[in-house]
Length: 351
Image 1 (cartoon, rainbow, N blue to C red):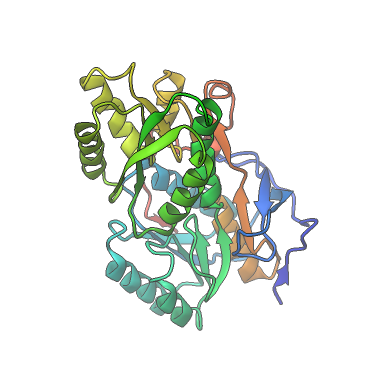
Image 2: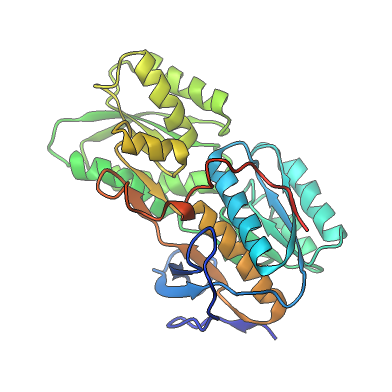
């Protein structure tokens, strides 16, 4: 029978290193699982060394059109190869494509798979499908938070904390009583659960400060869409002091701000981490960008599913420790846990 994780400790097997890291990490574990109300416990997690058989995992992601999900893809395939399991990866084409993702999950359940890893496009609208397919196959939430009904595990961070991390720079630099600043907030797709939670955390941090959120613009994380939102925000509010938001928006903003000769006026803050955020922080173009170690989340999700299938000790809800990347640490943090290698392209099958 599958064992559950204890709050205070995690008994795990030793292993050698992986391309994503050493194979041992400090992580957060939530007990009870799938709820972020209680503070997590901090523990050491060591990945398994080898699967007992070639399990076959069906992986469904919202898309693979931005570096964040490419990094998660890298973590999944890297760990699958390392421990000897098979994966097929499917992408749903974007957050608006709920019907496509429902069909993909149903096809996974009907196929020759042992478990499903799901990066959901919706916090609650995938739940009826997950509840139904979980009668025959375990489903593990990967990166994106989802309602707990029907899932057997979750590798994800608290995106409220990601929003808090993004807002912390503003809180620290523009407290109440200081000169007011205007911020355009571009968090991502309005229907995505992670956007809801990031928005909550961001607003919590800037509430009561000198920060005024003058516009909020939602949209799919395609580059063209996000660039249009950035341009619209600057057209509507030419006196903006900050643009804050998802990494695709902030990558677009670097270019737009430069073209409009606003680099000295408009500062940029991201709410998650990509290669462009890394370059922007190194070059002083981005003030800060929190990382939830997307590649490591892919590793943890595969590891979690295999542990469940093999009846090993399972961290039902585990996630990397969130931290801000800024000028103080950009040259020495573990980058391979957050980003795929520069020459990596998405891989859809490991056999």
